[in-house]
Amino acid sequence: IEDKNLHIVFVLGGPGSGKGTQCSKIVDTFGFSHLSAGELLRREMSSDTEIGAMICDTIKEGKIVPSEVTVKLLHKHMEANENNKFLIDGFPRTDENRVAFEQFIGVEPVFVLYFECPEEEMVRRVLSRNEGRIDDNIETIKKRLKVFRKLNLPVINHYSARGKVHKINAVGTIDGVFDNIRSHFVAYEC
Ligand code: UP5
Ligand code: MG
Image (tube, rainbow, N blue to C red; front, side, top):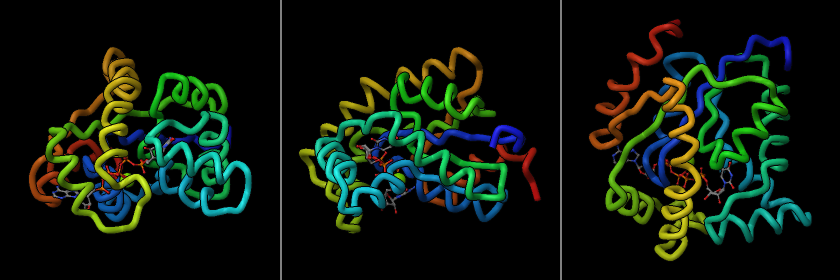
């Protein structure tokens, strides 16, 4: 995938901030492919392997799966996809994730979309979602929020210092939020 002229946009924000919801809309409108790191890990988790069990334990605790596992999964899916435009949702979660991606994939994101959302609203959304996710319970949500503050905000600050963070107000209707996202993708208008 080295000579694919990759356009990568990282989509970051706390649990329930609306990353997945808005990514589907961006895919429909601007021709990107959506890779949710959490989704890929959940799929891997259901495989009856040692790694699957490790991912399950990690997600239950709201902790972060080792970079090697996640970066390999992302690489595999980017390689198998003809597209060169990818929304990478919920990754990188840590500075270590970020460095591993930049080294292994060898590209930096064009920009980073950051969904800013009050924690009470994120908790409300995650608890009212009903998809049977093992991490959608109040104990795990509190842990996910803590990990987000401690490990993911430094990643956002890193890209912010490089002028790459496009901050989105994640509060409002789904269409209202998307209206604020559009202007960041004018270069990709189909
Ligand atoms: N909703 C969406 N937008 C709304 C709006 N504007 N108004 C009202 N409601 C809105 O949305 C959440 C819910 O809110 C939905 O019901 C939606 O309809 C509604 P969603 O779009 O699903 O939010 P999202 O930000 O995607 O929330 P998600 O829970 O997926 O975020 P997380 O970051 O917590 O989850 P992720 O799947 O990325 O990661 C899960 C776990 O995997 C992590 O905790 C970690 O343990 C592990 N992980 C890693 O270890 N490494 C990685 O690289 C990635 C994940
Ligand atoms: Mg999601």
